[in-house]
Amino acid sequence: LQKRKEKKEKRKSRFLKLKPPATQGPCNTSKPSMLDFVNKAKWDAWKSLGSVSQEEARQQYVDLISSLVGTEAPAVAAQPTGSTKGFQTLLVSTEDNITTIRLNRPEKKNAITVEMYNELIEALDLAGKDDSVITVITGSGDYYCSGNDLNNFTKIPEGGVEKLAKESGELLRRYVKVYIDFPKPLIGVINGPAVGVSVTLLGLFDVVYATEKATFHTPFSQLGQSPEGCSSYLFPKIMGAAKASEMLLFNKKLTAAQACEVGLVTEVFPESSFQSEVWTRLKAYAKLPRNSLALSKQLIRVVEKEKLHAVNDAEVERLVERWLSDECMQAIMSFFQAKSKL
Ligand code: COA
Image 1 (tube, rainbow, N blue to C red):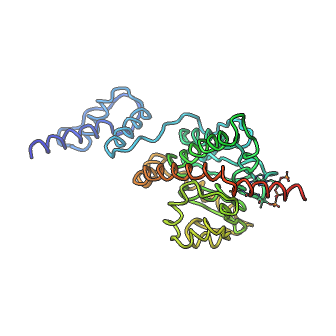
Image 2 (cartoon, rainbow, N blue to C red):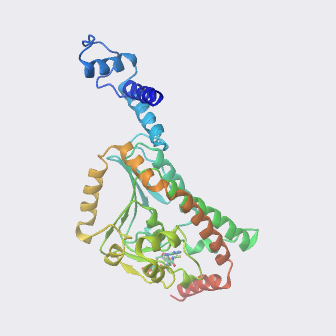
Image 3 (spheres, helix red, strand yellow):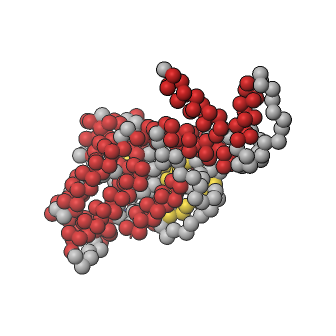
């Protein structure tokens, strides 16, 4: 009992010592009386900090609490708010504590090329470490995203289709991994139709807002392929096995209202007020304490993380086989043949 008491006292004193001082700079007020316990404790804590700044003390406090709850401390600011980095296929900006990643190939319905996959990985990596509170992914133009750019399958390297399939699998694995590990709230602002991988990944977002004109379509079997983005595990969990099978096996396209009903979408907004309503709400969310949000999101995710990585590995393995199948090659050829007939 004595040992436990000592341990508790030790923790308490570490806690008090690191609690951020209400005032900045070295302690410069007179010592409170011995009987004024609360103010005496605060004065002692402040005094013991010497000239540690309020910001430094706050960070030490966050690190201590993170170590006590046993989760990683959320990444500290690597990029100041308001900074932008130039990408070829994305528009990325940070404003009002929100980092927005906008898919920016509207003329191709934001289909995801190899370059775009790599840029998304980098943009998400930076967003996870910057000092924004939440991260948003949305699309430019009338589509949210038309999924994997089917041209990715036509650029065959010297090692042949096997090499292409293997490299594409590795890229997809890395891409999905960033979503599994993303350390702060990730919000989807679905501005129009979504296809393929842009739909399957929604199970890894924290909140998904959609305009009423959005649709959700995963035509994998039509293309001789198989699901990715952890959807083979998360979709049945979110919407039940039968509804997930209608989407993932039988290519059922959902309206925004249907996607909301099954729990893939959080809320649907009228097209006319979609942008203003959603951004007003997001700006309010982004005023909440950054570390509290990040740590809470990590708590929600941590129980499933290992499982999700295993699902990602299994899905990629199956897809690499599928990409090399006749069924898939025929389907992709049909897409380009249909295009050339137009
Ligand atoms: N891969 C490659 N190119 C794509 C694409 C994709 N996933 N999605 C759209 N594009 C291209 C179109 O080929 C077209 O290119 P072009 O202007 O050079 O002809 C351009 O984007 C505009 O698309 P278009 O087909 O003219 O628009 P639409 O409104 O008639 O149809 C889609 C939009 C998304 C329904 C249609 O393009 C489509 O079915 N794309 C394939 C979607 C898909 O199967 N994704 C993979 C899922 S696993």
